[in-house]
Length: 464
View 1: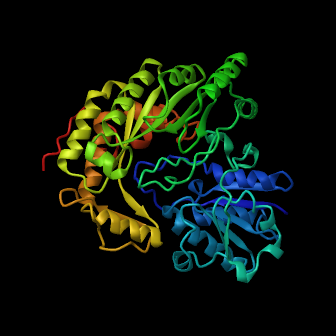
View 2 (view 1 turned 135 degrees about the vertical axis):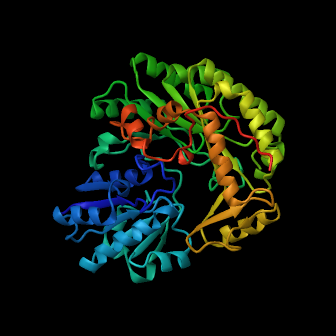
View 3 (view 1 turned 60 degrees about the vertical axis):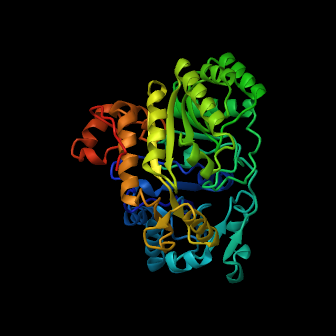
């Protein structure tokens, strides 16, 4: 069958033991597949739902491999590299002439890493490839002299995603991409120097929402509005509110932003326009750590704005999931400073994702970043950039890698109940058919210490 296959690589082993039920939509790659689907027969698969061998068997059984089209493979993170290598090996062992084209914005940067970790890939595409994807179907654009293809395209937000080509699409919370980039300068962020694009026009967004409602047959559909930093103008906010009200929409949506971006007036209007969950990049409430991260030039003002935003969201019945990042230079004092601030605002927080900084990649940027944070007291646990592309860190003399993981888990447990966790995860990550009783049944055999939520409230002290 002349079908073009797009595959988003999964993980052979979940990076967190409690995440076995999560589904992560690779919306950017689905966007590329949607472009091809305008004129070709396309199927899109997520590796998170299959082992490499199971997906290979499925494709082979349906005769989706034995044609002249390439297979497009996306690697959304370094954790997905082993899955991609195993799957591509299955392909090459049976169909040696089958071309595999691989992309992945975060992974496809270092040619040396690719050479040793993805041996069965024919072509690599670095960057966001909306301007290239159609040409990649034509073999004349694929030559041995051009194994590494770079796309400089960034600003093109795809107008709409074709969910009909997505395998088992009804299980995924749909996403609509609104903007790209950020440019706020946080030292740990890949988008720190990438300028924020203009937010998708409300009329275009409305048309996509209505189409998704029809496709999913759900007037109360949940949608993830994708932006590295959601920061609409007040004019955009007012226009979207009018369209939402005029069309009697009932959908709810989730977005990601900083704590110092959305004004009180915007929050009030967005709440009336279906906003239910915000992922907030607070990162820390330590004055020292905010400065080291280059999160802000005015930490005191930043935290005042964060406090106001959390309270405004709470008043307007918006759930806030706060992200906390343990960063080089961290000590028991900086962590306790953050904990005091979080406890002061606990009433307004639905949940917390706390995690420790990891360096992803093996390229020159990663090497230089490690050298930079070594000046803050951080060290790689292996005294070097790890060849896997995942470099774990001792954050300081006080906070080892193991201790940072323990502290991160304890912070999440203190501020998030089991029901809070389910509510947040069911809005974008759990399968849409996954209910609370399914969740309870899925975790009852797991040790409580690996779960990032509490069943009994406990406060922690960082005093060692």
